[in-house]
Image 1 (cartoon, helix red, strand yellow):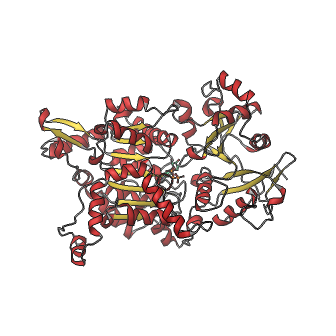
Image 2 (cartoon, rainbow, N blue to C red; image 1 turned 60 degrees about the vertical axis):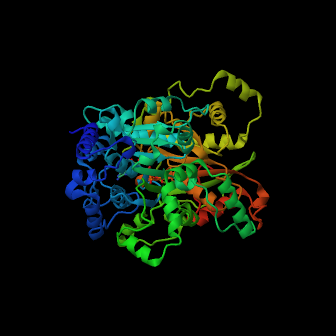
Image 3 (cartoon, rainbow, N blue to C red; image 1 turned 135 degrees about the horizontal axis):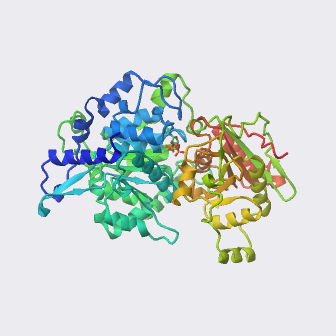
Length: 608
Ligand SMILES: Nc1ncnc2c1ncn2[C@@H]1O[C@H](COP(=O)(O)OP(=O)(O)OP(=O)(O)O)[C@@H](O)[C@H]1O
């Protein structure tokens, strides 16, 4: 099999030979390379073919019909070979992948939205790996070839960055003559002490094809060593979990006087734009300028531009922009389209997997309901010192088998249970034993009991964003739970969590502990349960809370696997019947969240 590495080097060599490079200041995109390389299976052809013959059977997250395969989408055969060798279960593209991969390879800006677990991030990685490597020649250095970063991927937290890196590593290592991973992909995130550490050293030593990082880490490097990033010569910029990374103001907030509150929130965002906004403002400054001018453009000019004729306000060459999430709210889309100035509006594809779903006759529903996965059971437990009970209205259903038939036994080595890393050190134990906890004892005991009774192999506990994971791990271990802080950077163990799975049992099940801030986008195939400590993004119920719940719930039930989401909230008996939102208890609020997403609560059988 031709190696993954040789694919990328061939692309770069071919490109270098075909282009006349003047100097580094004239770095140009190798836009003709994909055309030369992919011939009849170019992205444009693939789009046309899909339009004629859309996949008629699959639903989000299910593989598309055999009539569409990865090569048809414009992916280069050696990359597909590496994919098949590394991920034998990934046989055909999902609906949404069939739509967005050709759009990305065709150089379009893409707004991408589909259910959790539909393969968005995975497909993005594939498309980016497939892009021709950007290289230029330096006339001042004997025409020496210089490699550039081709794609920048912004993700909300380091665990997701390492997950994408592990996926790439598996594909790279699947070919013969595996290259150093750092040539293909690197991660740039801050460590526990907020340092960039090893990631920055590696970037100084080698330019990767794909750079994955958190916005703050990338911004830090941009501010101190901008030449390492070459932001303006990128070919693509991807923002995964974009609604988490770019804050926008919702037009409807029933709890506030609408207009004044909106204006105030907008002003605040202008004064304190988050790191993602800052980076995109830098990368797309020339697009912003043109978009600004286009606001007053006369009709003739618009018509000229749209028909491809040269116009005074033509868009300058700039990286394609891809924004992705399972939950893209209207106010974010409006901001991106009308206010940000980042998009090339004449060249945008909006992809939601709907083109294929509409052909299947699936009902297109509200934004929350589209993201719900029917194979997940949702339970809410009301917890007090006296008792633990299911939320009123929870129904008994035939339980999803926790261990699907044919599940194999995994060893403690595979689950990372027997390893000594991730230990809580002695100083912290001393501190924890002598200071009050932010966690309520009866809530932790309920997590421990529910985990012991129902989890066959691996579960995830999601804590509120600012709570201490290490302390939770320690408290749970005191209760006899095999708890570990989620750490995907941790080589062998981290990768074991990402291995394909489901249907496994373990003699010593593992409870991984993370927070709301580090859970978005994670794909841990062996998970059967997610326990949620308290209301997500509480205390009010609004679109942010609902979206947060959808994303947490979406960690299970991926690719047709079943799964359970168990939310634990403190039980305050008087709260349930109250009409006012202030007095309404967390249980009633959770019931509203479930209603909004169109699911009913299911009894968690271990409790009354
Ligand atoms: N075409 C495919 N066939 C089978 N499995 C796939 C396919 N594409 C991706 N997967 C698997 O599906 C899982 C989910 O993929 P991914 O994380 O990309 O979904 P997502 O849509 O980004 O989810 P989220 O919105 O939660 O971030 C991964 O384990 C991946 O290996």
